[in-house]
Image (tube, rainbow, N blue to C red):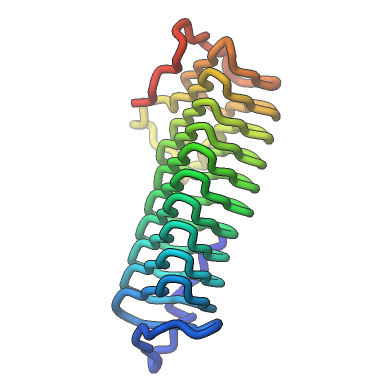
Length: 241
């Protein structure tokens, strides 16, 4: 994860109120929400306690918050979006360079474009139809769901479910062994991995601890190690709980 200590980036003496956008305008706050107005051009948007909204058609170089979510409206663009406590949502047709979340989910609407990685620690990832992610998608805890989407890199989790419905992963699909700090002997539920009809995993499927694996006969997957799959009999994959 590349989340930086945002508090160190926000001078205590500086709290700029949101104003109509000018080219490469920066907005920094300690408390309160930040908004990039429609079709405006911005540099850095940052706040310590508050959400960030990037309205339709706006362009933002980077958006960072500690306690708050980030929403990127339709056809807007952000270079990098980072939050510690809060989710990140990109609406239909929006785009981003990379996404980083510690505690919160990621939701990508239809036809979204992500150039780099989508990274989360404690939070699910939901990707809608037509969306393309150039890099990796990674989390530790939380379900990942891909509906007719494409991932250029790997899909990696530790404890989360992964469901592919008509989606393509060019790289590996991996479920990593938990480190001692994350593992609990009380954790009984195994991750459920579902590779639905029409899905493709171009790399290997690597399972470093026990999972429930379901693979549809019409899916195409690479070499598997660690777990034998259960084949899906029906036309559709079972949905993760």
